[in-house]
Length: 332
Image (tube, rainbow, N blue to C red):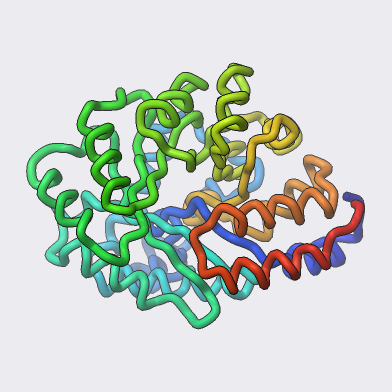
């Protein structure tokens, strides 16, 4: 897609879009940290530089924990951060958001998880549909967490659960049981897999956990049988290209397997993951795919359409967005 940068940006901004893989803690607006401590947070993280690459997941984990810990101490702080995040997404013509928060945080702050959920939902501006997921880490089923999770299964406005954490940790038996109970309670289930772990982890998420929404999933390309499984089962991969590059999952946007997955019949969406760490916006993601990976206008439209097809939004929201996108269809 070769266009003048201003024309490309205008086209991307006109696209009705979804954000379906976003961690609220990892999306904390940096100016809120600067307001908290102008000296300590005077400059943004070095990881915002376009050519920055993390050496390991542990390096990423250390950075994000150090940045988010000072801010997320109450439900009110979650509300304040979410309000800025949602406003900025709406400014980019995002209509639908699936966002997760770290459920084990309830062990460390006074507010209950349901209060955090309500605080996030109340921050959504008119015209933006928000679905909130509770994030669970692979090794978090200890202490008070079984009771917290059992309570969360009853929260009416919780969309579902998402499995987070480094894929070096095994998939523990409790996860299978919780995912089964949550589906029975009408919740939508996701899992991070196929980022730092291989295609086998993607297969585990689909076959053992029964998810049809995999966060990342890009390493599925290492096994054609797993790619075929994703296409056959109608699994959606919520992919975050800039995150994948900066974390070393892929070497560049040009080398990203997104187009291969799409050509194989796997539905993929585009999101930002942790903008606090990567310094990215959803507009940047679409522009990067066009400028660096050669995605056409029609391909960008299809990626935007995928989010509206898979999201659990009100039908009028879906219908209106798909109609707009149909009107934007054109060759690159």
